[in-house]
Each structure stands twice: as structure tokens, then as C-alpha cells.
Image 1 (tube, rainbow, N blue to C red):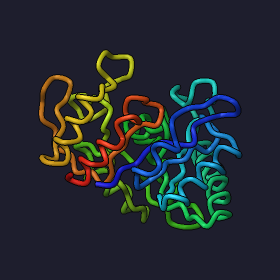
Image 2: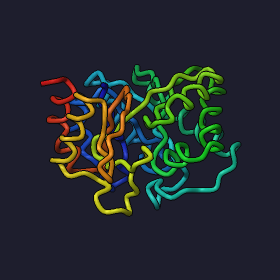
Image 3: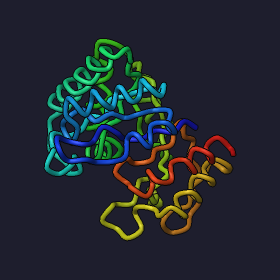
Length: 243
């Protein structure tokens, strides 16, 4: 599996995450596009950091929700979702190309990601945004038991998918992430490393009720706003590499 992290989420004088500490250990940087976090200078610096370490970059668009860090669902129409995603991706792509980087994928953030996984209409709009973009970009979404259906939806539109699992989040029995409002939704270091090891060796995670859930993931996410996860990134890298 590859290792990805949500980065570039600082805003103005407000700092989020430890981007410089994380970047040497990851394969893919999901870079905020300004709607939930990030600003032009932060994006520029994060892209430069990715270029320095040879890390692939992808756009990390969100609902227009700076105050809520993109974690509040919004009732956008399909056309609004398509336009807002293409706007954010184009801004990030332009800045990346200026530094000799070419984004290869899009990973929605927060509530938009959760809505994409739970609501077919939102997922359709997200896929249509990529299908009608001026060049191909893969869509990163959650590996769940419905992966075959999602792959068929994407294939019909000519989109490639990257399925991801999560190092630092607890899974519900249906394969979704346990709500952050629930106790134990975000793993501590011990549980995080145990989940990564289990994914790497067995291709499964243990859900909140103790069920084993099989997942086929291309990439593993550590959230950049999870301080404990960021601090464990070196150990996670070693597990992913089988060391």
C-alpha cells in the first residue's frame, strides 16, 4: 500500500498539522484547496515541500466551509458540487504545474467525502466533476464492501479509482468510519499501529463491535490533523514497508 496524508491545511497565521515532519514518510500528499482550509501561500509551500521529497500530489477539495473545517454537510446541487470541485482542483493544479508537479488524483475532504460515500447523488456529482475535467484524474475514495459497485460506476464514466483505508480511524460494522461524535472513533497510537499491521498482513480491519472486515486498499491514510497519527508516521511507514 501507498501512504497518503491530508496536508496544506494551515490558514493564514493559524497552523494545522506538521507537514514538514510528515512529508518525508509519505507517497501521496492530499493538498487542501482553500474551501475548508489552506490559502495560496500555504498551498505553494506545501507543493514545494512535496517536490523536495518526491511526493505525488492530489487535490483535496471540500464544501465551502472554512469555519467548520469542511466537516459540516451542505445541501449543494449536483451542478454546484461539480463547479466547486473543478474550481478547487484547477486552482491547485495551476499552482502545482508552476512548480513542476502534476496532480494525479482528487480526494474529497471531510463531510463531502462522507456524503460521497453515503449518498449516490453526491458520489455521481463528484465523479461527473472528474469525468468532465479537462484531463484524467483518479478519484480516491474509501475501500468498503461496496467497492465493486463503486468501480462499476467509475468505469462507466471512464474514471480510475484509488481505494483507501484509514490508519487512525475506527470502522463501523458496515465499513463506514465510526462518527467522530462516538467514543473511540479516532485511534490512539497503539490501536493505530495494530490496525495498520492487520491491514498489511491480513487485509482486514476489526470493526467497533469486533467483526473482521476485509478491505482491498491501494493507499493508507493518516489524517494530518491527528497529532498522534502524525507523530506515529515513521512507525506506520515501517509497517507499510514490512520492516
